[in-house]
Image (cartoon, rainbow, N blue to C red; front, side, top):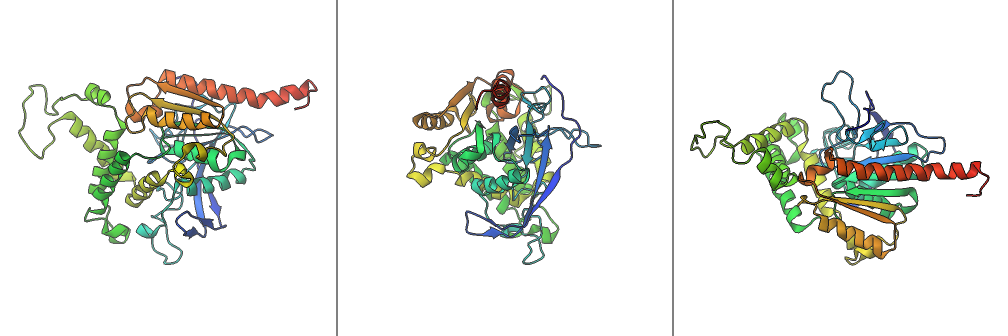
Amino acid sequence: MTGRSVGEVSPQSFHFDEPLPLRSGASLGSYDLMVETYGQLNAERSNAVLVCHALNASHHVAGNYAGQPKSEGWWDNLIGPGKPLDTDKFFVIGVNNLGSCFGSTGPMHANPATGRAWGADFPVVTVQDWVDAQVRVVERFGILKLAAVLGGSLGGMQALDWALRYPAQVGHCIAIATAPNLSAQNIAFNEVARRAIVTDPDFHGGHFYAHGVVPKRGLRVARMIGHITYLSDDVMAEKFGRELKGGKDGTLGYSTQDIEFQIESYLRYQGDKFSDYFDANTYLLITRALDYFDPASEHGGDLTRAFAAARAKFLIASFTTDWRFSPDRSREIVKALLDNRLDVSYAEIDAPHGHDAFLLDDPRYHGVLRAYFERIAAELERPATLQLKGVAV
């Protein structure tokens, strides 16, 4: 990995009093969004890149927090001085979405109508609602047009929605390991994970805060299910195979309940860790937002018509072993863009890691992003260069 870290960073809380209408018909009268920024906004306010996060991530995209070891942002390998998304050239914005559990208004916060935690009463939110809230953050910075919107997985869906519904405010849309909607199989995985949570005796209909408990058993299982879908079969086989946890002699314990295999130990570790920091109601909200995203549904199922209003230039990237958001789904997006004669670049990267590849430091993948952001930087510099020569732009 080339480049340097952005170093120590501090989040900001942005408060909004203007009501936010939601797709569900509900409205949030006021709310807070957690935001982090990296790099400097140029005088023209033209070099801003918005990064949209996936399911269990947040506004903390890069850098680290003072006094907190191992607190690197979730995309720290990508963003920083000299990295593919170079903060010496771009002003990068990370926003924690509504309904999350990392500081933005969500189920853990007080419902103004009752004074108690929202819990299960927090309104359902969609990708479109998140983007509408992000627009207000961008406007707060005085930015009229983003150089780019970038996201992977669920973040890629948000990037696409920006390009579809705010076409004049996006220069480039970079959507990685994503899809134009979830397949029935993906919705099924989400539903099984949600059932694990809501059937946990400690869930209490989503109002577990009042009982002083957390539905950890359900969260553990939900995370284990999700984690299986993020990895490829090859990576699982390489990392764990059929190796026994107990050891070198290969002796089976012949137990139906104890941990016998290394993969079991790994999944339980991931589940335990997740249940210690993630909110159960947030998990339900975010997976539902994934399920609902389907821009073509408002156009009779025609994805080409859905993209007709887009004006951005696009980079779409997928990974060969990603079976949750397969390359076929990215190619659907590419076809719809080409049908509309839009400027689109497509990279299908042969990486063994499965869906999680978009978070990792694969040199081919990062090479694609570096080249694309260099293209954007060159475009930003071009008008100033032409004006210096006395050429009308």
